[in-house]
Length: 406
Image (cartoon, helix red, strand yellow):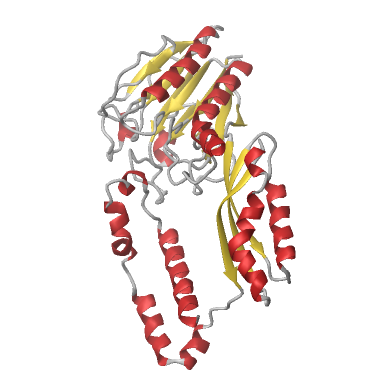
């Protein structure tokens, strides 16, 4: 029976700067900044351990168009390991590492095959004699907004046909609509597998006939990219497709909310937080945690003061020396406070006008525009989704009411 086995990964973002984390201890910060390379090493190990026929990297190998020498060198070293095992690698470049960037070029090993700016087909013959046609293209510039899927044309004869595409499925609104396509577009091509990239959240658009998969990125880089990250090991034969997710992330981003309504003392709140941290600890992995404490109600003024000033420091004790650390990067404490608009309006007419102004507020983009226009900030900030804008407004309302009530 004809059969192929390969690794599908995307969005490596090697040498991502991991902005906003300079407050971390030096050893943890170093590990976080090394994590994209650690994840790449795990991918290489998986390819060798599974003795795959080839590897597919579906775009955004590098975090920026300048492609640091460090990132290129580390990538080349991993590719040489695969060359020694006679495992070829098929690569497309995405919107982050497009071909029009400016960088000092390092040659890659002969087993690495790059797709050009036009959709093209590459032929691979397995050691068993099976023929695979792989189709793809690399971004010539950062913004590719036309439907490149129309240029993918199946070319026979081959035993397997695999499409590689870095783009946005038409139903998604949370990402830039680069190289847009629909699931229907992909199905019409009658390929055996679609190796997608661009969306950092692991997503299976179709499980069979053919599998259509976003593997997500190899390593989370901020709190939006939470949970375990990795790649897929795919096995295709004439009858079925098997998919196996392989974890590669070395540092996890997590966010949890702890309800402290039943806690009546600082000690009880501290223990709640400790239990949460131990529950999230994963052997061999680091975790960067956003911890939200809600419904906090401490009557003792001294305990409340300690909560605000010393809780975080106590939670971070000993984590610095822990390989499987859980480091709280954000601690948000929310007092037990029900926002009752009707009650507030009855207290003062001012609140009626305030809530009307909040409800009529339509332009959160204008309020945060200075951040996106900042020379450094705009380089790293991504646009906010509608749900994120709504959440921001709700938090602003709670903060404003809390300050006014004080």
